[in-house]
Image (cartoon, rainbow over all chains, first blue to last red):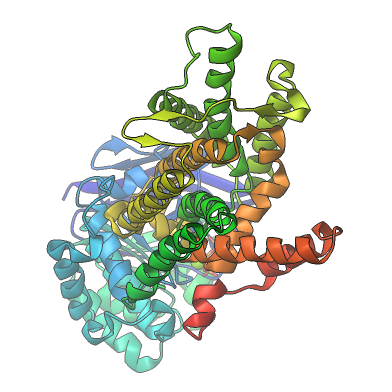
Amino acid sequence: MAALLEIRNLRKSFGGVAATDDVNLEVAMGEIHAIIGPNGAGKTTLISQLSGGQKPDRGSIRFRGANITRRPAYTRARLGIARSFQITSLVMDMSVLDNVALAVQASDGHSFRFLKPARSITHLRDAARDMLLQVGLGDRADQPTAALSHGEHRLMEIAIALATGAELLLLDEPMAGLGPEESTQMVAFLKLLRGKKTILLIEHDMDAVFALADRISVLVYGKIIATGTPDEIRGNVEVRHAYLGEE
Amino acid sequence: MSMTKRSIWPTLGFLLLLLVVPLGFYFYDNAFYLDLATRLVILGIAATSLNLVLGYGGLISFGHAAYIGIGAYAVGIPVYHEFYGGFDSIASTNGLFQIAIAVGIATLFALITGAISLRTKGVYFIMITMAFAQMAYYFFLSLDEYGGDDGLVIEVRSEMPFMDMDSPVQLFLLCWMSLVVAMLIVRTIVHSRFGMVLQGAKGNNERMVTLGYNTYVYRLTAYVISGAMCGYAGALMGNFSSFISPAMMEWGRSGELMFMVILGGAATTLGPVLGSAAFILLEEIFSSVTIYWHLPFGLLLIGVVLFARGGLTGMFRGRGN
Ligand SMILES: Nc1ncnc2c1ncn2[C@@H]1O[C@H](COP(=O)(O)OP(=O)(O)OP(=O)(O)O)[C@@H](O)[C@H]1O
Ligand SMILES: [Mg+2]
């Protein structure tokens, strides 16, 4: 498998804290690659550098072979990288459908179009509605986003990432704050994406991670201390000590 | 905000009233209300243009009076040279030429100041737009040839094809039609794909950038369109008052435009016009009650800007934004 995403010697520190400490990572086309690690390990910081929200101090990021380390965030989205946020990030005063339609619109050529009402452009609306149906929010499409529950917002995050049509999804704790039932639903949905999308998945929920991931990397204090299949990670002594520690 | 389809009838009704009532008074020999209405409508255009960036873009521009000034000087300066010589290349009483200058310079000013201002956020954006407007203010203040502080009487109104700007009725009709067109332009823009991006960036800029939108460029475009429209309003204002002075672009004037948008209802089509109407009305009332009206009036404006949620349009719909 060719690497879709290649991270080399990536570093980022905040003051004295190295949030990303010489990270090397490859994500293969089509795989679900999970990143686990304790709170404050630098998982979100890593994702932000991939999506362009934060600039690395050093190192390089290659996507489809092209160096994107210094590319602004909006160009990365166009290249095919989408992100969901650990802390829900939606346009709260627009409808659910508007939020998703904006994601569809983003990959539908430029938006310097001033005349036609966006809400009457059927291919944008239909694609957005379809996306909402897929994540189970079909009946919520016309609600104001602010009126939805936390669990529904988490689903919207996924729908939006998918609606951009991106190949690589960076999902930052999609299960954060979900109840057991909602989590099960989310895992089931993410399973459906296996083989269709490449996913870099950050998750604290170990059951979810072991159920979904093709490979897992363990991040501790900004360093990747192990990468392997779920079985390899389960058996890794160092990982147990550093993170899974319970046994 | 954008979920429910709002009825268009209140807007049409209000615009119709705005057309019929002042003309009615005028034909019953009361010219005062037509004068008031003309000013209202011109301010309505300016407020509508501000609403594009303030209401729909969430960009608190505190410098829009500069565009009114620029537009008005674009009428006054060519007329001045037509009468008193010098600067032959711009000496003109041709209205279309003057409007082209007004819109052109307003566009350029918006492009340059917007490109810089939009690099900042929040309170810095407010401050820097205000600073640029004050720069324009001091620039015109320093032009002694055009009266400096005292301003300049515009000797003749713009010469326009098919109409006579000296006729109060025709001038009013032009302004009223311009307002309708301005409202239509803004309404069309905000509902377009461009407008969705602009509004999305107001609600959550980081999300929009992550989706792939270079929101800076979208905002700058909106800012330039807004500045150009406001410059046009300035050209009308010059014709209406036949007088220009730097005072037209003082920061207080910019604050009044913000007041109109916010009081009337930001991010609505009719809001800025309702706000202009309320402004004109309040100004009349306050100034007739006391000559010390500026202070209480100013306090009222600040109160509204701070506390009005949804403005008048929101109130009529029985909800706060
Ligand atoms: N903007 C910032 N400024 C300063 N320090 C930061 C900033 N963002 C993150 N950090 C620090 O960097 C480290 C990594 O933070 P990060 O949010 O990436 O961790 P995380 O693995 O996502 O944690 P969690 O599991 O809690 O989401 C932490 O020590 C955090 O305090
Ligand atoms: Mg995190």
